[in-house]
Picture 1: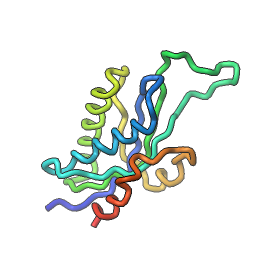
Picture 2: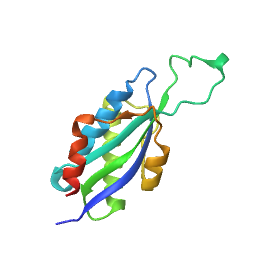
Picture 3: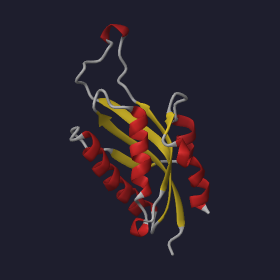
Picture 4: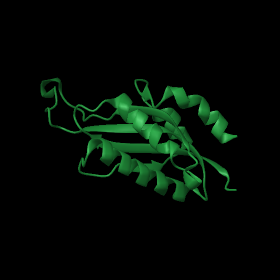
Length: 143
């Protein structure tokens, strides 16, 4: 049986201008649940936030058709052979889920492993939890 892994992740992607950030977080959490050996599931815990371009007050609001850049910092708990393989699998799954939900936004989501410290230090205070109903599963999945 493969060892349990806790992988700190950063996910970034463009989303349509009127996309709901909380819905994006739920999409990421749902996508993780089908990962793992044989679809046994993984738990993604973290927060989502907008990474909007810096603008001067005179430049607001952004154009109605301008894509918005969203980010997620968190931890993926799963079992697998190694971090590289786990990240590659979650990258494929999130890419497919984002494309299915939002259509082609021009580029696949970027998904990569980062340092745990970066998750703690760089998550904005205004970020929204991915799926607070599943947060308790993080502890159970790690055991």
